[in-house]
Image (tube, rainbow, N blue to C red; front, side, top):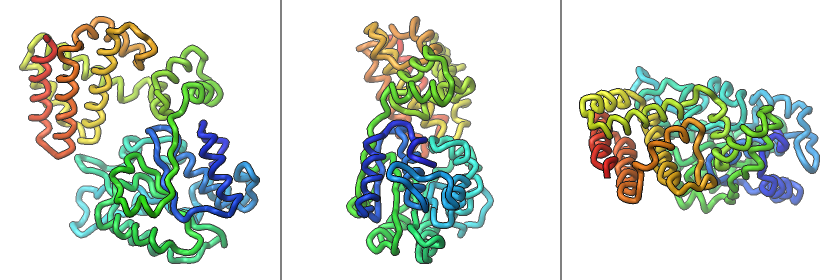
Length: 377
């Protein structure tokens, strides 16, 4: 992975290169920023830059032995930490660690450096489990980093979503950050840094990423994906600075299209007050895993906002696909100043309840019944 493969983020890349040039690479970096802005891609590129034997002032060489191993994600001095789950049927005392899932992790990375937690969870045997980083992982990482570098240079510990650490793991990682092994660089890539321990944040140098510009995404779509210019412009606008979202929009069978169908069904059944079918709808979505349920509800929340804004007839304020806009033409008038806040609040309440492991059938049927009330205001 090279810096030139990272979309945009020129200021961040220049800052990282300057750290190396000045010989002032911090022992721990915290990458923060919006979804899909390229934090993880930049972390891969920076790790490659640190481990490359013949890097230039601008980038890793991409050709040396180190870079060859990095291309296959097999470099012995690059250590990955990421959220995992405890598979069903494993012993009660089993504590999963990243190495237990490393083959699946490599399969994900081989598809590209831009991915989401949702995409990673598709590789795991998830039912209703929440992904976490366990204390077993922090113990394993401490053992790895206690060894000398096999290639005589840096050791890089790349921790994806450190906010997923449980309390025990977080405290042990903190100890590693307080007393870092020699020639070790930690790169923590976080989507929600506010969930991290203050003491962990204080031991890192934070680098904030900006949202990608529409032009960044537009040019990447045209140059890397050979998308025609008109479609690339629309997708770049819808993506709102999120490259992963742009890629999802190109996927004809993407999950959001399924969520749109479920949203349309909910709104039509609620408007017609078809309680029997709403119960069936609730039972159906209750069978999804909790992570997917939360993604669906967040999608519903976005559509409520988009339909409300559609009423203002200001296209630059809307971020909808063609399919979403086709539905909004007739539906948007039902989301107005009398109910937009209430509808949003009901969905946010459902998101909270699902996150707290409430009974999904009750949560979704309650949401459906409340939608009957609000949609006719």
